Length: 32
Image (cartoon, rainbow, N blue to C red; front, side):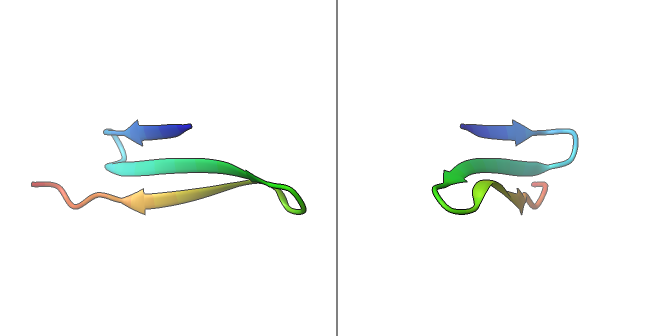
C-alpha cells in the first residue's frame, strides 16, 4: 500500500520482505 501524507509532504511506501519483515520508505515531496 502507498500512502500520501499531505501534512508532512511525503509519500510513505510500505512493503514486506520475506526475510526482513515489514519495511517502509518515506519519500519527501517538494511543495510546488
